[in-house]
Length: 581
Image (cartoon, rainbow, N blue to C red; front, side, top):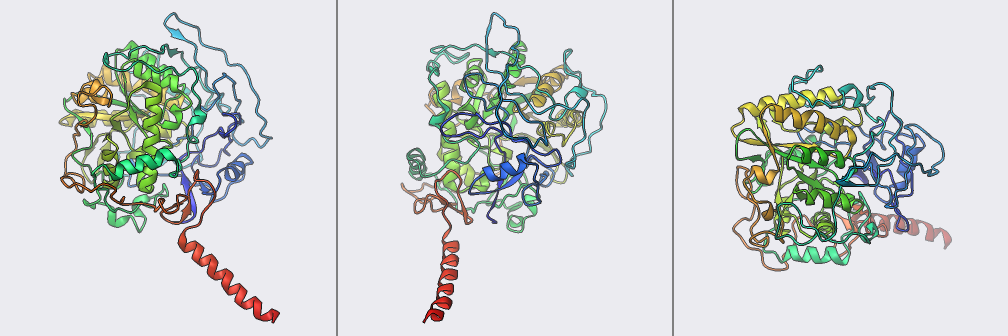
């Protein structure tokens, strides 16, 4: 793998160790993708190039669906990274090359209601176009999906739905809704045995790793988690990390033998599932609702809709976003929604070393428990990117993986995926996303069981589609919308270690077909080596593949690179010394 590292997102607010979120948005030129390749040593030089409008083929890449299915590299730039004293950070418009001076403004709050409390509103978004724009990034339609018909939706949207022609890419951010009130010491809905909500009045995000960056593996916490996995008795199979570049991942030469390989069972290329994966629901006409990538201020409107409609959902949250929005997570949990792990930095897990996977999951579990007092037993891999090495680590860390439903045939699969992640940056229009949703409902009508749908609450466009079209459209079509554990006939209490009747010793059951994970039925001795290890117990700043780890301290070269450099230096000396004699 090259020394250029794919970033799944760049945080537009450069979080510093000394101060939280004081910097402006990085303004991406309008002709470039939000996806970038960055030198693994430091992100800021590459961010600066984008802020100055400099683009190169090596620095930017438009990302497509691999094999036309759920291996999406969706726009996942964290839109909310304001500090907790309600400072408003004004974003530069796309293409703006002015200096990066941070300015503040006051955003008018929505009218207060007796049942809610004020919440920090989001920073202003990039300047909105007055009319819907066409993205210069090619719109990629999955080859395995019937091209959507653009037009008037046939589903019945909500009466107050935002018109589709107003859900524009990079548009002005609508005023956010109030966050439902919570109080330290309160008990969450439906969990009388749960511990009281923690007091977060003195919460500091600086107590956690940097946002949107794979955590270092040499900290005391991660070392302890690694040892726990080694002592778990779960065999971590020797499966090498997959090279992932976000574009045609299934056609990479090293990955091609893995496609359809039932030994590794890589979901990304082939949708291979195991018995332990949750992939659909038990009862037909049941929609297992889930939202990924939050929490953000846009989650507030979604919570209000779900509460008004008496619906429950499952939120797979990004740990580093919880670190900056713990009050949002408390509201989600307090209202009776199910909380699951979605990693710390939203990275493709099969591309990471086993130590990095443990760090991603461990920090997310910790920040969730710090915020709401319980530890989730559900997790979802970003992009659905999972194989048997990741599954084994997930199991050793006491969680069940949750995917989303894929129907149809091997030749023409239909993912129950709204593709809403492609709307905020214009890779898909809202009409196309709604058409994809309608096609999904057609597939659901002949699917023998209930289904799990993938949606997101990272950007306002995604939430407007959810509350205006997807959720009311499914309800009006006669579907029962529930959380995933409800559609699996699993008690909410059994979704958390602390409230589970077995205290987490029995994991929530899966619904996938196929075989068990590699090594099931066998027990690994304590202190067993990790398959897919990066050798970080020897040098914690070197990861598999020969590139320096971000967040691990000083830049270290792998052994092969060191040997090459030493050889070049020695050769030069042998040439130079005789000239001096």
